[in-house]
Amino acid sequence: MNAAVVESFAKPPRYATFPEPTAGEREALVKVRAAALSNLVRGQASGSHYSSGSELPFVPGNDGVGTLPDGKRVYFIGPRAPFGTMAEWSVAAASRTILLPDAVDDVVAAALGNPGLASWGALLGRARLQSGESVLINGATGVAGQQAIQVAKHLGARRVVATGREEAVLARLGTLGADQTISLRQSPEELTAAFRQALEGIDVVLDFLWGPSAECLLAAAKGQGAAQGEPRVRYVQIGSIGGDAITLKADLLRASGVELMGSGLGSLSAAAIVEALRAMFDAQAAGAGLKIDVEAVALNNVEAMWNCVPPSGRRIVFTV
Ligand SMILES: NC(=O)c1ccc[n+]([C@@H]2O[C@H](COP(=O)([O-])OP(=O)(O)OC[C@H]3O[C@@H](n4cnc5c(N)ncnc54)[C@H](OP(=O)(O)O)[C@@H]3O)[C@@H](O)[C@H]2O)c1
Image (tube, rainbow, N blue to C red; front, side, top):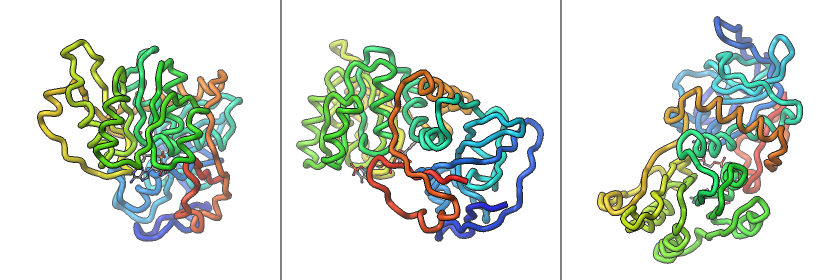
């Protein structure tokens, strides 16, 4: 079959031929229609993501949209290596296929999967957001962050605070539901002060960045404990595009109500991932109106497009 093929962790995948998969017991063979190029997929193809395998060659792609042998249209996630989703055919556990409502088209469904899971998984499966609570999103200018604003509001968030570097994008986040924005282009002292003010009344933090801004955010939470009955801050670590590691002072956790947790492959069960994705597609079909900026590109352009950096908030989806 035709496929994107990773032959080296140091090079982009090539459009080449690859053996076709066959489905085993409790697996589904999928005729692929669309698969998104997320940071996760790029990381797996370069061997740098925590879920990367070590065997070469393989087909990249962690999720996608396609049809089952009976013609039903599905979104599916977690294909069986070495068969990723960027190929004519793929294979995954049947339990990881989700029937797609007609109202959600192939390319939009493929684009929504990974960034949507980031917030639906974190808010439903980890933070357990209650309607009326408030959310701060650190790193809201990217694809996943822009989804997070919309999803938090859809799930009933009272106030959403959004942070980011790109001023022009920050200025547009109000149209997605952000009530307040904070620029990350400030000194650590200024940023910590801005976070301290913004954190008042915040119940949940969704952090796509980690690194220096997370250090400021956690420092700002110091003293916001449960002593006066303030809400505990459920801090969900989702991405680390701003830095892999932070320095975390011990007294910060003792002197605050912060509850630190992660959301991703490993901290969410396979069932919770499927549940979150199903909730997202059903909500979209029912009129949630989640907006995502998508660029559809034919898969035979995979090598040229792999390292291209689209404008903030845009997702490339390969069509097969
Ligand atoms: N755990 C999960 O379930 C899950 C799911 C999806 C994504 N993720 C992770 O979440 C992160 C964001 O994903 P995405 O799909 O939204 O990526 P994206 O669309 O590429 O957006 C990334 C954004 O990060 C910002 N950024 C990049 N480097 C930065 C830095 N050094 N400091 C501050 N901001 C920086 C940029 O914002 P500006 O434009 O403002 O500069 C950019 O818009 C990635 O780490 C991804 O792997 C996790």
